[in-house]
Image 1 (spheres, rainbow, N blue to C red):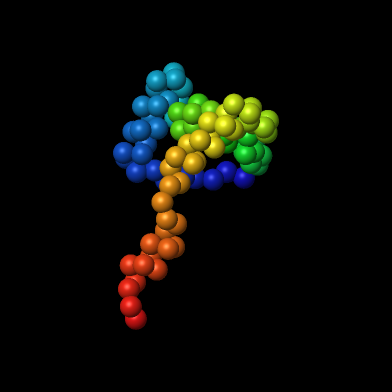
Image 2: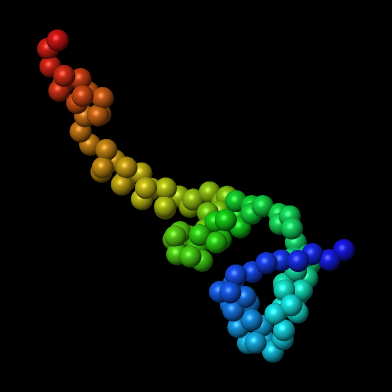
Length: 103
């Protein structure tokens, strides 16, 4: 069965220019494009969390890749000191209660 497709002048000119770059006729370029669509995997498997993290790392959105290894004791000590340094003062809930004042 044969089908006919209607293209506007600008669409055909774009197709003809792309075909000329590759040294072929516009019809052959369309057939090749359809062939690539048929052979490309239609159902790509979804990206796993690890693959997603690697993509983010390569794009510079992550500073390091997470691992399931526990942190070394030295790093835990550093994190604990930082937590103690920045956690001084009253909890936010107490400050909110004080700011409410009398009812």
